[in-house]
Image 1 (cartoon, rainbow, N blue to C red):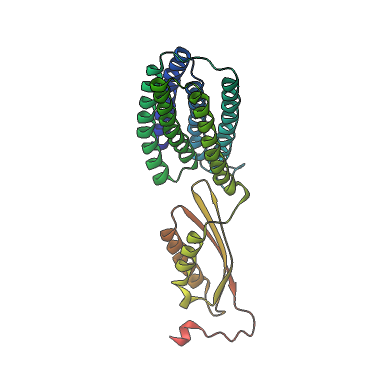
Image 2 (cartoon, rainbow, N blue to C red; image 1 turned 180 degrees about the horizontal axis):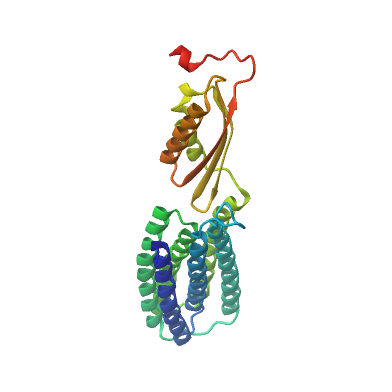
Length: 297
């Protein structure tokens, strides 16, 4: 089993355990903020399951129906995960608003405090592992899953601190207010995730830093061609697709052209991980006065 699948399964297992603990603490204490955290973790579990199947699908080789590969499954999963977080956040706000209108005393708040801090520690460890593998494998699905857990760390700490304050002061109004703060935080994270995951689905160009790296790689061989144009680049999962038109001297042979294109493709691949490059060579126009680099040499 690949590293991506292993770490996705780790996330599934940890989220399952934390959901059980949070539901137990929420029922014992009657705290809407703990229940909101349990719902948050349920969304994390769904996200982890989606991420597990997404990385399996994305790793499949190209086939007749998907000749460009399956990498965009990871982006689709990221959008779905973000939408699920939005639903969870809205539900939390509704429940918290009802708690403000109909306040109830909290019981066994100490259980909630302990569970929240255990949750924060566990999610910190798992999220760090997910981020590490996501960066090394350029996995959008794992990055989305790690983002969920990172958000869960902050919200768990916030809920834990709120419960501790209620335990010490008796101000039960803090419980729904903390829950609403949690919901607003994860809404922000959800919209950021959706934006990032959705962009490759509509073939948004690569970031300026990556486009500049491509141009610098091409320019290293500028003495062997006249110019280039129609440079385009997009991302699909971890794959960066790059294509361009290269204008060559009319005297260039097929063998020379092929060798030059290979060198440029290799240069771009060194500058940009997981790059797939397609170069369309063109002859200089009839009557072109551009000097031939070979005769100039």
